[in-house]
Amino acid sequence: MLRAIEERRSIRKYKATPVDRERIEEILRAACLAPSSKNRQPWQFVVAMGRSKEEMLFEMRKGLGRERVQPLLPGSIYHLAGAEFTLKVLESAPVVIFVVNPLAEALSRALNPEERVYEICNAQSLGAAMENMTLTATSLGLGSLWICDTFFAQRELNAWLGTRGELFAAMALGEPGETPAPRPRRALQEVVEWRL
Ligand SMILES: Cc1cc2nc3c(=O)[nH]c(=O)nc-3n(C[C@H](O)[C@H](O)[C@H](O)COP(=O)(O)O)c2cc1C
Image 1 (tube, protein in one colour):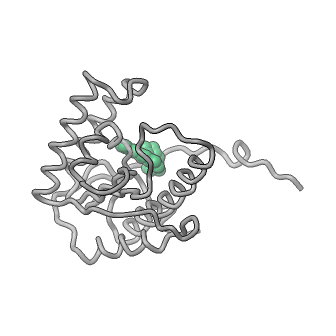
Image 2 (cartoon, rainbow, N blue to C red):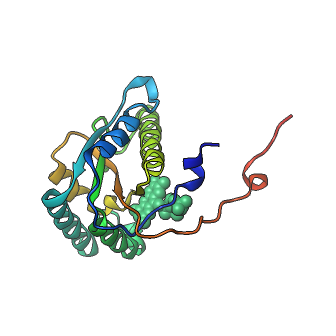
């Protein structure tokens, strides 16, 4: 097994040390080498650092505040406290990469089965790109956090990004400021059925 797969952890505390552009570019190159359905490569990346990151945080705070009073995800209201915590992680990370799906239908649009399959295939492709990013970060000695709590501020962040499609996820990056123990995993016997 690749060492990075075993060593990777979700890092939620970062040092303030800036990350050099070479390593960020290597992470982005790894993302672009991911397999994708029909080789559609349904991704765009926006790297936020410094002042741009502050602007982004302002939008995310605005979105979380709006979600409390005028939720677009009313069934997920109990996860808002978790999203506030993720916001703190984003504050401490020196780099945040936004991964946008330019081919996505609007989140609010109901889909027919074929459209859903198209979205699922693109989501799998984007997941592969995200995994390449987090593993490459680990192998370069960087901490990373895969983030979907951005969906609570989807409207605000999409407007800030100004890109076509929908924000898919974000990835925080930086020198790790913690060394978390591995989180438990379900046993193979529980998740695998061998049919011989
Ligand atoms: C699709 C996806 C979305 C995630 N979103 C968040 C998030 O918004 N905030 C957060 O703190 N962690 C987030 N995580 C990290 C998970 O909580 C973490 O991967 C899981 O608890 C296992 O821990 P590990 O990554 O250290 O092995 C996300 C992970 C994935 C794959």
